[in-house]
Image 1: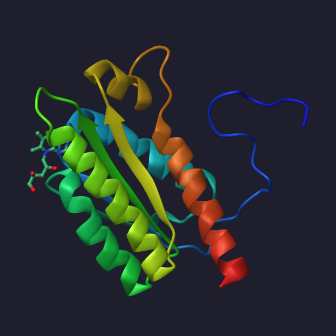
Image 2 (image 1 turned 180 degrees about the vertical axis):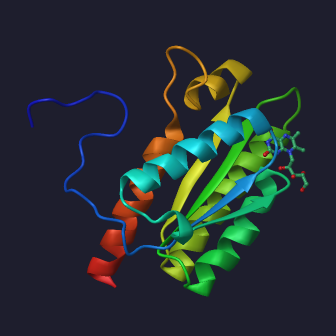
Length: 164
Ligand code: DLZ
């Protein structure tokens, strides 16, 4: 390894081709501006890996707490090669953030293990609005994490087919 990063995802181990994959995206509607940017980044990343636009299936839910339920139904249907679950949690002044973040992350992990369908954790858990904007590529120094989630979905879908 010559060029490697300290932080963030390293270089891919292969060139992945998503042209035969069906990918589901479930997104929450809370914090809509950030969600929209993340959704756009995810779709454009999937298309960059040759996933056909007609093979990207999008569903929405009110908030992040609802993500695990619909994600699980989609993953358990075995109609999709991967499911990407997108939400944006921004910490407020109560414990709400902690409870939802914990429930959602556990729910999504359980879902992929139980169904053997890869579930991509596209949930931002931000302490400030600024962090959310940065991670959606909406600030000059930002990076749209949706791009990483699209890449992760295609890689995990390919690896699922290798080992299942
Ligand atoms: C209630 C709530 C709050 C306070 N904050 C967020 C948030 O930052 N991001 C998010 O996706 N959803 C939030 N919600 C809504 C909950 O996720 C959920 O939709 C409601 O509690 C109804 O179950």
